[in-house]
Image 1 (cartoon, one colour):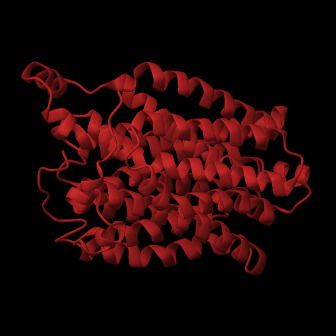
Image 2: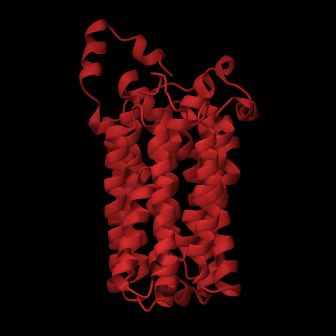
Length: 405
């Protein structure tokens, strides 16, 4: 991925070492925002969507699941099939897919059609997620690549802190369909932004492409992928059904405010990670896991107090906010020359976890009730912490090389 940087003239390289291409990186961050918000937006308007389409909340929760399934099923094969495409063309294709899928969702009065549109949006996400972190790395000089990824991944907590609460508010005020029309408009604006400001880069030549499954055997890749799968599963169980959980603790009118607090804490989390990731990836990942576990513990035993629920949202957000940057950076460094393949596998498992979280959450809601969510999260985070602590040589090393920064 360094060929485009090393081929620059010395003067251009010097400039690149002084600053990041913020216009381009913010466009990629907005693409991340679009993918993340499109995926999670139903969480804030779940009851209204279900009522309008004639299904229950558990069934409507599968609109998040089917999106994740679309991404999980297609990220690796589409990443392989489009490996030779120029990066800008591929990103524009993905954003066009979001515009089309959100338009169909906005006008659909039919549950199966809505689910098809959500699946298509997930396919577009699979294309986007498989290239965005690598794209960010290619736009930055080597010593700033970790920071570039942090900037791009900031789109996730921004979506959670501003997008989902705003979408929930707009959905309550003007109807949930309005929120999806806004997502369509955002994708159209973003397409123009990408055309204007994001530099193009070539795809990978056939002789540069490695078998994807080979990357699992690389030391460190397996632990990072496991942590990704289980950590995201725990998060999705709680986040997808947060409205149902808040109804259980008599805070059904506070979903948008709780999500706002959670998202604000997520922004702080990603700021801390972006500032400290150099040399501290392992410590930050352990801290993120412990903070998330602490938030789940508060929800499990102290949810009688509304103030404690907000405290739990803060702890959860602090733990979650920087996790995409931590995991993307960890798998990229562990993968080395096969970083692109490792990223595609991380995207697949991330969305397997998203899909699994929707299904597992629905089962827990129907069988054990919403009170089971924080306990389930606590159980899942035990092996996550064990693997992060154990992977001190590879994956989450105690001492990192310079490759990532």
